[in-house]
Length: 318
Length: 191
Image 1: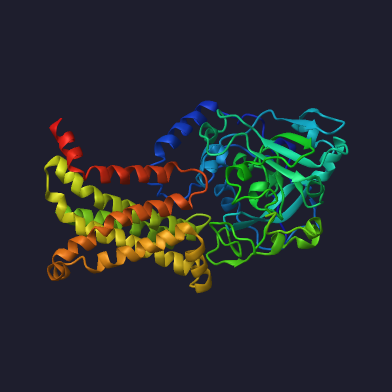
Image 2: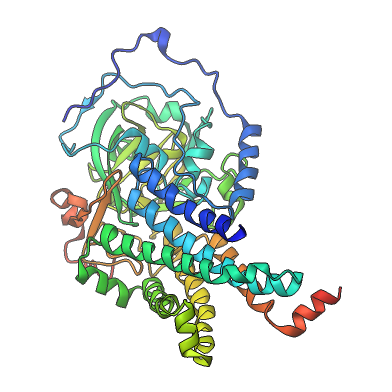
């Protein structure tokens, strides 16, 4: 399937930086959120309104990893989100984050590597050619979507920091800023959000550093300005709004695993035969659809990743 | 007059859901939206039903007592809607999946049991059965307290991490139970 990007963009049309973070209006909406929690949340979903302008990426490389399945609508993919930093309701992130655009961003690189330090977003992105990858994303809650992401392979980024032999795992951290992210004022999870991958997983060509979707910059509710997309794992592994990358020797303690170890494993590979205590994982429902479809092992990416887990008991290491 | 108003008011959530469905306004996950909303309204109406008695005792205004049966039946109506949406739309009447849910997932076990408890209450909510059953009717209908607890637990065990909303419903339920104890209500009324 072809993804139509908006026609070629002239430099004059590219947005200036006038629509940046407005803390006051954000704090007000945080107040509304707290007051509205016990009121009937009855009025359907709120559409994510484009109150910030998202830059387009023309000239994206196509990828042979892309699926030709029907793409989820932009509205659905950006209005129905799990991003507890902005609240636990599905529409909270689009409601509270869509007016936010992070202005300056830096990523700290630390741990077992030869090039640690603070990197600005520009430093991080500069050498990489952007490509578009249409991936399936399967949430542990049994819904799924098909999204054209914009990014580049994680392995290409990690190599630049020259990890050494003690780098067995990579640990990622989301921004912790309760002023910006009102959901962090409550201890629904132990902030900051932490996720991690084994180095062999992180260097698999499917693992994607993502900065955009649908040919444009990521909206804040989808993890702007920089996130991971790990398509063969449940969605919570695809950490959003990353501020820290650390090479570590031991398996990192990750947020959902700490919150409920019986329900969320470290690996969290999509697996229709291992049920979540609250959901069977054998089927899934695409956003926008009424019916269900079968869930595939490794979310349909077994050919690319199954070898990573050879000989492992996936019922034990779920 | 009061009764007609409450009758229509209790019907509005169902009408609103029907309107959203017909106009394709249920959002990204329509089945989840219908499931959650019908379930929430079942629980809300059940708690409203349970609030009538303490409200009348405390205020001395006894007119709302006549609304109890209707509100209780509405709670059942939304619970039935909730169950049907789950069985048909969510599980596609695939009974192997449904059975697995009922045995393996505590929140569904409790939800299903709560519906089974509501069923005899709804069936006997008419004058004929009240007369026929005599004293047994009152005993049977004390099950409604268990239904309230079941509904709240069903909600609590469904939630992943954020217990604020179901916790609010649990608090209201416990408060309504507390307000049924005479020493407690006389204490409040004396003030």
